[in-house]
Length: 221
Image 1: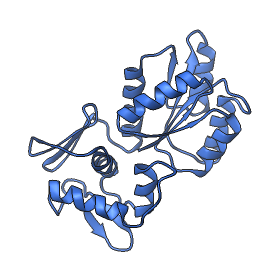
Image 2 (image 1 turned 60 degrees about the vertical axis):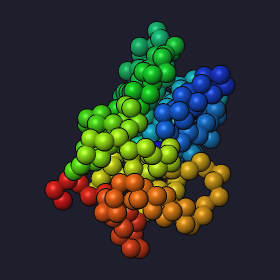
Image 3 (image 1 turned 30 degrees about the horizontal axis):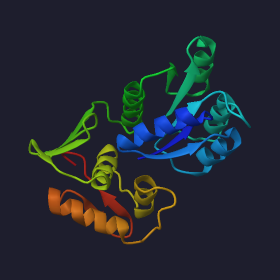
């Protein structure tokens, strides 16, 4: 899943990006408020980590403009520890969660996982569909209780489709959520990736809707 991290402190930004990448996310960094607002308004992100003190445009203004334009992706705001009024303003402006600085990376990742799950209607940390389960905390996919070894890219594919179970996902959306922005977009890349996952999980799990994309059906559908 594609995450936008908006943070003007380079050390914090790099540390967050490294931790989120290790947790299986595709991460983009932005330090300027104006650029961050434009990216969030024009690019499809699964979630945003947003600092409030930014050059160009402050975080609260960015968030308000996103919500006013109809952007619904979950937003985790980062605030100074003592600025409780900023946390209140952030929640009122449309933030989904907040985290005071300094923070532990594992807490940031846990909060982000929870926001992403809730935004797709998944409440439990383990998503189960039929015989397939996805443990979002351990980044582990199991079939009939047996862990299946997946590459990071294969895991991202299964994770995205399971988070959005019951919805047909286009090749373009999968490409945008599974690959870094400068990835050379080979039209066959997603198809090859789906083929590899099918060989590991069975041919019937990921279904093709020709001309539309791919879907993992909800259990009982």
